[in-house]
Image (tube, rainbow, N blue to C red; front, side, top):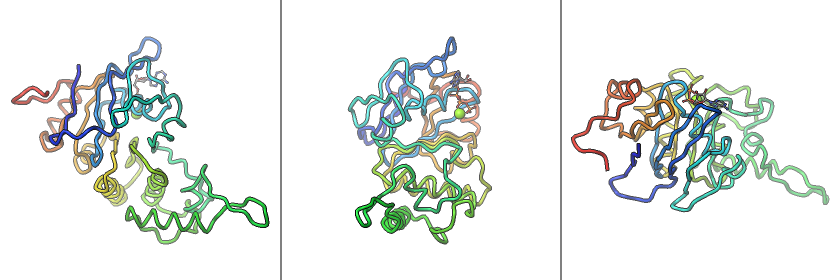
Length: 264
Ligand SMILES: Nc1ncnc2c1ncn2[C@@H]1O[C@H](COP(=O)(O)OP(=O)(O)OP(=O)(O)O)[C@@H](O)[C@H]1O
Ligand SMILES: [Mg+2]
């Protein structure tokens, strides 16, 4: 089924997916999914275990290569054959294992894999001062407050570590931020801080996709929800147009939301 996630203001999607498919052997993990993702919006992807959520976002992240279909950024077809392609296209993904190095401090983690260097007596060395300066600038820009930047990141709380991992996605220009279960390991307080950071990034105009099993989180953070079942996209609904129970029904039944008018 083709369901268009159309925005009332008819702006061009930041990222669009057209007929994306992936099978693993005989199993069709993602079946012909069409989806639009807009700047300044949080799109949540929900569905039962094995619905195909992670496989879908892994195709955007270059971890899984689609069998069929097309991905476009602002209307231009892009080729994403590996994670590096995705990163170069400004598609940044946060996985559940945050990939922080516990013994490194905040700037060292933010710049992990893209360290800044300078030369001292003709020898290239890491530019700690500049990395710290740019880290401070970044954290200020996205309103993340940390007590200090110099401590090893293992000494921060779960929510602060999550914020550091999210900040890292933004050190370069991004087109799309993808998060797979970003609140999964966090307590209530920490979750609400991360949810606030996500809405804050949304308000600054980022396009954000969040996978979550927690529908309270989905309702508090998402503008739209894409429901998947057995690899297929069931429907895309606005969080204003459905309630908690209706969303659960869609996830379980795999039936689209009943509307007065058919979606166009
Ligand atoms: N690399 C793989 N090889 C074989 N099968 C896979 C592979 N990755 C995913 N699958 C299968 O594809 C289907 C979709 O999996 P996927 O991980 O996308 O689901 P999900 O919606 O993210 O589930 P969950 O909520 O449990 O994370 C599942 O049946 C899964 O077993
Ligand atoms: Mg998953």
